[in-house]
Image (cartoon, rainbow over all chains, first blue to last red; front, side, top):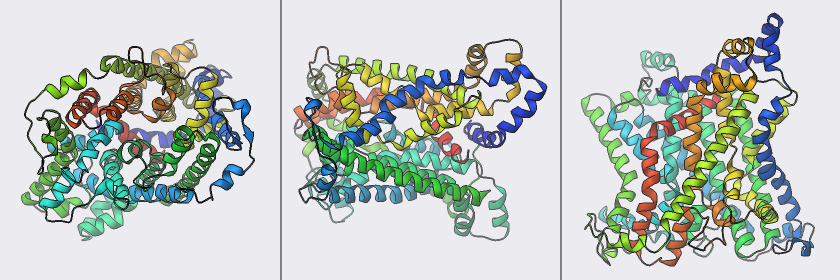
Length: 327
Length: 292
């Protein structure tokens, strides 16, 4: 079942290669087919989706730039005062929480999620690959946290991280390891949020890796084994290389969702203690909707947008590199 | 499951029966660890008052349902559940319609500007929700859409993932099938409805379950857009926002909160477990699409 779906993209890869050529040769013989496919009504078919995106995504992105130039009055926009780049200059003021520290927290969180999440989910995928009812059940168990709401599960983890009666310290205690203050100390709060987020996200990326493993051709691995490669050499030289496009995808999607992550910081740590978990996303919310400084919040949002675009473009470049290396 | 034979790991752990057994045991242990937080929440919710703060933690329930009834009567949960189901279902329907139409346009039809539109739709992926929340709030305020169902449905009624999944499925259909129907004189909408829809049905199912779950689990958007819809009798807030409000009001009542977390999470968990195959197929297709 899974394998039949996993082969769909492989089929499409070949069809996308030359749809233009295919239709051209075909339409020379059958004019009605050409009429069927070539139509100005294509605009109308894509219009509902494009209109929604234009109204709520594309135009608003431009509008964010505009708002970021004002001391925006949320109650009466006509009363807003033009500030030019004033909101951007404020980024470098040293009032707490600073822009610099929140940018660092965003990169700290995203970096840990990308490295930890990718390594962990690849290891889990290698462990769980191939069927068997039990391994399948574990796969579902792993995916379950990802399917449940962040807000509800964050509440659970507040108790788990409780230094007085929580499961986390109880576990460390029973293993005779040093316990932690978790969310209540500014040094361990971010690691605690990362532990929670890995628990919530890793099921999805594991299944993505499982999908990648399932469509890999077998011949190279078999040849490697015949040549006397051990398991580690086979993984390092063959599987890891073949998986590269999937790894790039996992890294990109983890980086982007981590940069945007908001709810766990809201419910789990409230941006604290002492702003230790105030990321850029959280600061945008805080400035715009709690402190009602919409203009400054918009300037922060523009920076967040720039960081996201940067990562997306880096991904594009590396992705095309990986694809051509494979081809 | 016809997954390809293992790479590497076989020789690491599968050296023999002992290795296979060790691998199973490890998988079971990890799976149990991932589910354990949910189990512990149920235990707290069914515990005696004050018991939640025992150390070492209590790991077996005492079946005291009083926390559940206390939590259930503290908020209009039925109304909140109804809101969530209404919002999520309407979003799914809208998303299916827009994905089907746009996926058909991008996958099958040829029209001037198709490439431009494709790039426009793809660019949406780069614009994070946290960035959009400010201008969309201003926009919703101008359109008098704050504290309504509409603002929770329409903006999420189109999905880049959905459009490209439908497009992939259309590209995989042999061209002759659609062309033959057109030769018989069927209109484009007719071809889409009677031939296209059945052939891309697996994609539609994947989109439906993922959009439904995404809508159910969303938080930042509804909490901002419905912030003044607290009136309990006719609130338009979804259940997750209600849970958050409940948590800040009753934050010290841990067993009650655990009960609320349990009964608000159970429906979505059941939904996932019944349809887990579809979710896993969705994630698998995300991986396969990497090469496309």
